Image 1 (cartoon, rainbow, N blue to C red):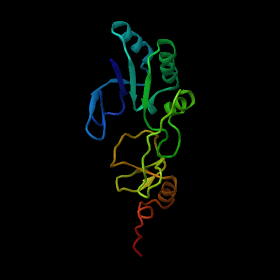
Image 2: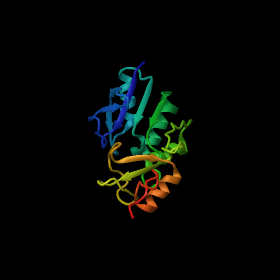
Image 3: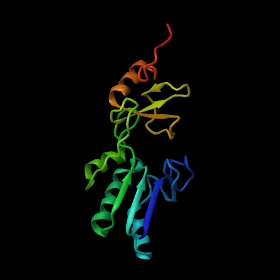
Length: 175
């Protein structure tokens, strides 16, 4: 079966044109940006050789029009499209692509992450260079585990209010 794999041009942490898992698996991928006409690219590829599936990584970076175009691929070309990405940013706000995927997707499957306390980690803390959480700034700053931590809502609120990870990990501030 032929699968087309796409990833966001903006995220080159693992190399441009590559999708990588945390356990080391990787696949070459076509890049997309806000101007990429995914439906046209997919139709062209499908005419050349049948496409059986489309996988889009970092789908939070899709535009509204791109999400609509991908729904057209599903509805008009009968090609399944699987999208993987984040729902919300470090402020707890929806990404644009995620907003429309949540609204228009046929099926949603949440891959759960666990906070250090054992609860579902539905929030993401962004850390500054000194490892302190903050909630202001640009929505998109590319980074990995050194820059972002997944936590539950309770620990997200505590860390943001106190500007420190000490409270969520049970450490006491020096007197």
